Image 1 (spheres, rainbow, N blue to C red):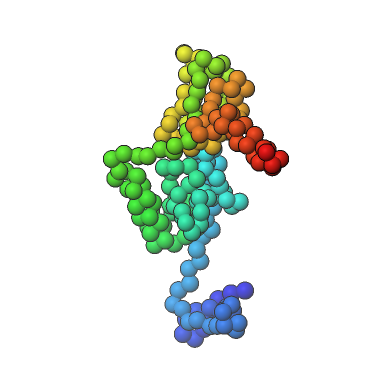
Image 2 (tube, rainbow, N blue to C red; image 1 turned 60 degrees about the vertical axis):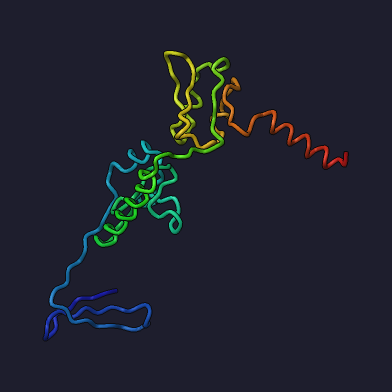
Length: 196
């Protein structure tokens, strides 16, 4: 446990260095303790609104600590600074620069390419129940209540298929993953396993 004592030439800070495995004494003119940092009380509400995760401590959680340190799993939303967790001002500035650099890779393009596997709605079958809208993690699908059908925002859709699996009327399909194609693959694998 660190200790601060008054010495002949100022303050003495005594602690055990975990790397050296022995006690160290530093002479200091001034000792300033940093205050504790806690997440903002509105963080859970914002996380639900943006559909992004929080850590156990209540700070925002990045998509991958090494590969995507300022990205969220939700495309187009980035994290930096104290929203990510307690850090020094220099680290916050570097992380903010990294977030801006990631954002510029999106904004600098003339055309954005979307996923090839995206959901589509058969308007003749859709009953506008809203189940697809409730389960979509990417907010890519919304019910048009005036026309009584669900609409897919193709730029936001990631082709996860959750809406298709939830649709009780069978109105939603994901390109490349139609029921006919999947059943054809299953039949082929069955025939292959039977040796025919």
